[in-house]
Image (cartoon, rainbow over all chains, first blue to last red; front, top):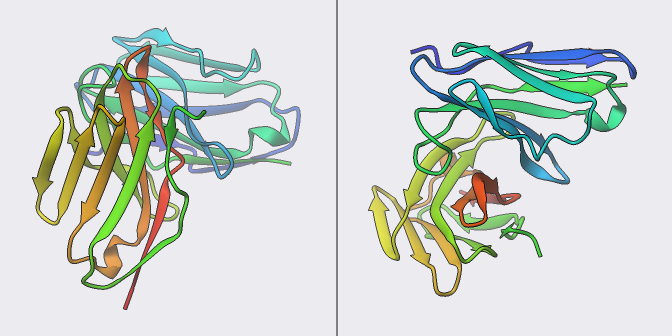
Amino acid sequence: DAGVIQSPRHEVTEMGQEVTLRCKPISGHNSLFWYRQTMMRGLELLIYFNNNVPIDDSGMPEDRFSAKMPNASFSTLKIQPSEPRDSAVYFCASSSGLAGIYEQYFGPGTRLTVT
Amino acid sequence: QKEVEQNSGPLSVPEGAIASLNCTYSDRGSQSFFWYRQYSGKSPELIMFIYSNGDKEDGRFTAQLNKASQYVSLLIRDSQPSDSATYLCAVWGGTASKLTFGTGTRLQVTL
């Protein structure tokens, strides 16, 4: 199994630009999670999907952030417009069930730098 | 009060010693408890989970849960330099139907 795949691995962009992060979950997993990790705030859940449906997006910081899951094998997290405070590592994780019951498998992360 | 609290460390232990990592949580209704290990520059990986009060052992790792005290710990026996990493405590259940992570404890195993 290839594991959770994320792209790009690194992204450097200028303030005000649109950023799109991509994730392919493990085949057969029906839950997908987007996290953001910073030194100050640790690992924060932004949004999670179950069977392609957003279940909890209370962690999305503001309207500049949006996430979609058009099918079971693909999800995107978009930031528009980006700001320097969005600089962080963004992880995607997938699970074969809801968050609390089954192990979450994390992708390698996307390191985003907004200048 | 943070939902999941951990001492940030670093916790330094000599090789071969027992490392004890602690975590407290605020939601008394929490049901599932996880320990993830994260090497620098890498993604978190699950090493233990526990649902019931008491101890759960897996190789050199033991997770301990005390729901009355809202406390979960991870013991690492015979610590090795390869155990040097940040250990994240995660809690699920209660009022939040999502996994909430602590900020992690950095462990350093010295030769």
